Picture 1: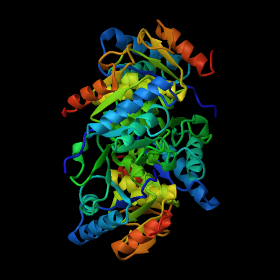
Picture 2: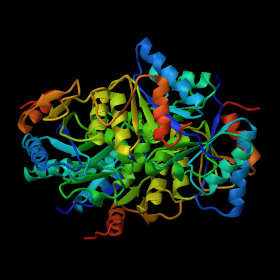
Picture 3: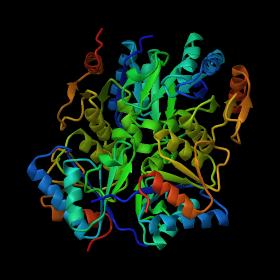
Length: 155
Length: 155
Length: 155
Length: 155
């Protein structure tokens, strides 16, 4: 069995409508390309991306901070209950072959840093222009295309 | 979307043939009952249970100790790369609604202890007779039946 | 600078008076022998052992489940706030060269299992007679003596 | 017993001489003010800060990525062996009341993000000018002064 590539989508738990729409498109595109979505499993960007992926029939994994799987947003198919709080951010990016970052705050920043440290390429989608060493995209489709190429699978 | 119940199978990474056969049956029964298997993602009981589940068309999640998804056994559909070493054992049982324990050593013992601490019921399958507060089963089918009843879903 | 040997004391967060007294003696003996105590940082056996160590002028480290250092018992000199819940148990034993186990429940059982997995010798102090592969002691002084010998330092 | 305030110093594991000198001064100042230093326990900024603190008689805690306490730099008095890899970064900042950040890369960036997420104030010492929501200092003494004020203790 060949495992499908896994792409993480990271961003704010509380985000404006345009960011959420971008996240939903990213999730949809990940599913359309046959990849699996991993995210932090909660609200905002995490829920929007998972919703987009599920609407296109893709698989979604949520890496939760607590021990209660019911804390996952309704679009998470597989809930991983880490009980680790913010240290779970390392698992979100560590479990992905590439990371798509949307606008966010400290939690998202920590995931970008951890991804860089672990050697996971990060594609910044209309965000994080102040940071170096990130790939850049202006559309969800472009971000997913770059992410898939970077994890060694383009279609 | 109703999330499928998640059952953990735990046991030795290096086990004799009869224990592996029991693990494979447990995995198959979990899949046949529509539940998702979670395990530690490596060899021995973990691989046998995942193989059994995949052979019956079930979903399998492997919670890996390292950061490299390719360390997962070939029957793992979704590899979670924790990078946490043995601390990942808390995630294996925390992500399950119930746990089926086969013969094992220190790692398995730690998972039983963590499951009890987190309130996840543990069904000992022909093993761990020296421990208290565990449910008991002699066949894989009985173990899965008990586990599903305990996580609030019997069929 | 030679680092002092570190001994973990593990046991129930809610324990009867005789177990607490045993834990306090163990902590005192650890300090008297120049070793550092590490524990889970909360109440019961953890607090009693830390109290014993501090009363003898020893150093005490508490590995806390949450992010709030004020949750440490008052005898913890250095509070490590892991935010990891029960997964922190792996750090308690991983940070020790040897482990002294008193009576406890699931959390203590998980620490024994993790210690065995990580190769840290475990000395059971009037407890855990049902488990194999543990060293045995009937007094706090004997337990600490064995623990120090096992971590390569006897005096 | 009142616990001493704990200040984290974070920065690159491989840093130029001027950054190492700054880290050493920060560690020395932390010790001079009666605070405890926590860091990631390895080389570069971590070792320089710990050296500075020990030279002034302060206590130093190293939160290590692996399970082997001997991987700590020689200036670490108390080595915490997490076995958690990069996820240990959450413990470094979670265990501190305030964080002093020097120049670094992905790992340091992740610690800044985690600190912001956990509500630990971050003082950027001649570094990280591209990030928002950080306090700023140009000297080690000023950074420690600000950090101590922010964790509710000025002297």
